[in-house]
Each structure stands twice: as C-alpha cells, then as structure tokens.
Image (cartoon, rainbow, N blue to C red; front, top):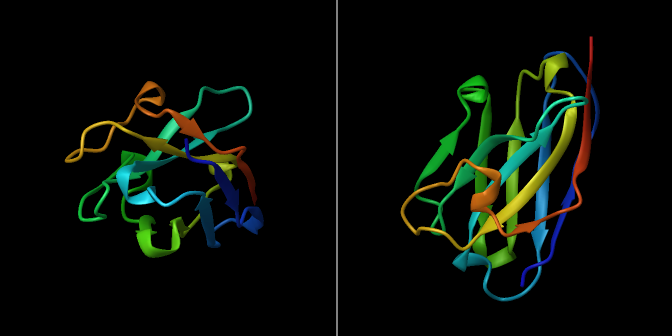
Length: 126
C-alpha cells in the first residue's frame, strides 16, 4: 500500500493562492494515477484534478480549469496542486488519492481510487 499525507492548507482571502502537497510513502509512487478531491461542508466529495503515472496527461473539473494546476515529482514521491484565484465556495477539506487503475487516463470517481490521505483544510474568506 501507499501512505498519503497532505499539507499546505490554510486560510486565504478570495482571489488568493495556495499550493497543496501530498507526500507518498514507498518506492512505487510512479505506479499510481493520482488525484485531488475536495469535500465542502454538507456536500459530497468531488473530483478536482488528476494526473497519470508519467505526469504527461492531466484532467480537471470544469469549475477549476484555468485556475488550478496538478503536477507530480515522481523522484520525490510528491503530488502538488497549485490553486489560484480561489473562491469562497471552494472552502473544503482537500484530499489526495492514489489509483491503480488505467495507465492512460484519469479516473474521476471516488471508487477509482484505492488509497486516501487524511485531508487538509482550505478556507477561503470573503
């Protein structure tokens, strides 16, 4: 298995930026498709962004396209999410997740991912 630990969350004003990190244990980080999800108060957990094993292909929720960037450094076993122009409605707990699914596409459903971090809180003030 892989252990995932998120960091980088915090309080930011509307329009501000945050960079989230997800540190993965083990030597097989590059075997996993990686994704970011978020869960706002009273809502279901939703897909935010994903990246394939090589990092060549990415996918994003429509609501974050052009503002968020997902990336990975396989040699450092680390996943990132750069979030710009943040909105109050994006206040949520953000989770990183790992998938052993297909090599050439990004899964967008919770059930596509087998391993999850504990989450990091992002609060966007208005």
